[in-house]
Amino acid sequence: MATTRPEVEITDVLLRDGLQMESVIVPTDVKVELAAGLLAAGVPALEVGSFVHPGKVPQMADTDEFLARLLPITDVGLPTLVFNRRGAERAVAAGARIVRLVVSASEGHSRSNAGVGVAEALDRLQDSGKVLDDHGIVYEACVATAFVCPFDGDTDPSAVADVVERLLQMGAIAINVADTIGGAHPSQVARLMHRLYADHPDANVAIHLHNTYGMAAANVMAALEAGVRRFDAALGGLGGCPFAPGAAGNIATDDLVHLLEREGIATGIDPDRLGAVRRPLERIVGHRLESAMSRVEAGAARSGAPQSTDSQETT
Image 1 (tube, rainbow, N blue to C red):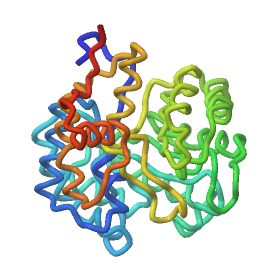
Image 2 (tube, rainbow, N blue to C red):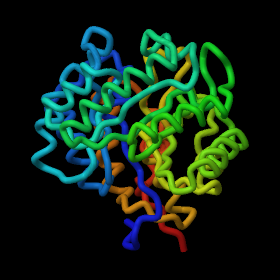
Image 3 (cartoon, one colour):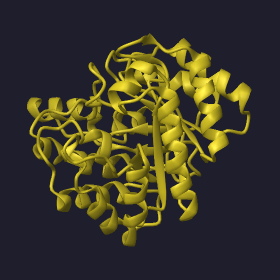
């Protein structure tokens, strides 16, 4: 584990994005155990659920209870997703300390995800933001389909910039741009990041990457070169969006930590402890995980080779 001050911040989104597409409903007790393991590994923030209608995303129906059980045991960020005023009111009632407001940059995904166009969705978020402001709850803003939309194709960077401008004016403390379906490529990531930093040099910008086409790691490097230091990832590479056809799993937290630490970039996360949290995850969700680190470990086990640790020592 790196002992120097972390140079990047990783928010693990396993407990929201990672589980929302699973066919199994993971019990709250199991989620609490997973969260405790991630915290023990040094993960600095966990996205722990979303305040959405349980009929639409039943995997997130226990967000209120789950958050209430985590708040007393940690001071780290535990953001939950909110799409409208009702979600904001539920977040307030649950005692949330930080919330992520979500809006799409593309019209097609906005109508699929929120049921309205981008302009109306932003108006709704303005109302949600006021509810949160009135109760002293800070919020970040997540911009879905910031690069590619499953309905509209490539997203115009100017459209993203307009949405980001409105969100910052509302009072969002950070902006998280999402490659919702994993269709972005490195030069596209670099262009958008440079555009956003040119418009807002002091903005706190994060990026949320999916690995549909195997380009998430390359997109991380492009984002790093553009100045991004905050990343979302999901342990084991789980994830996807029920309202975005074609969305595959997130970049894996275990792979991202391995990549960054091998590049000499401190994450503050213990890769061996992270591996220990990952091992029971395959049994919990009932299928193979997508992360490279899980495949490496499984291959070593099948071959009878000595089990290597996630932190790869070199001589």
